[in-house]
Length: 117
Image (cartoon, rainbow, N blue to C red; front, side, top):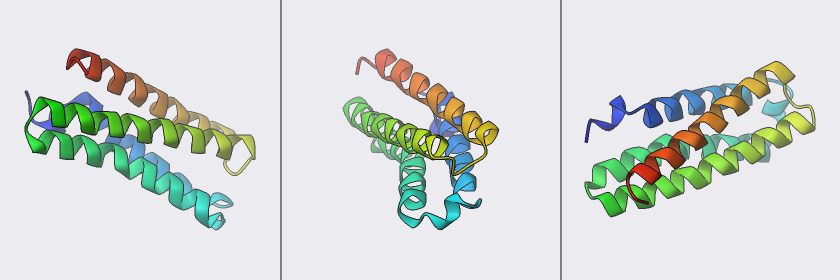
């Protein structure tokens, strides 16, 4: 397997985490402490779990950590949809990040299928 930083699933996850984190710095979302922190935690969990799974060096551990990353991606997607639905962010910006999140979910599912997980 290639280095994890070369994998599209990890590259997209890091871009997603940066974009989601950036959203939490903008008003009015930045003032909603709990939701802001949940978004940050879910977003950074995705690439971190991919790196951890890769670093553990076995296919079962990689699959386990990828499943955790997938759960975090779904969690992030839910938080982002809530932000959009209650109007805490500009529609174009939140829709762009939701689209990246959906793409990441697809990459994670595809990668897991490829690994037999």
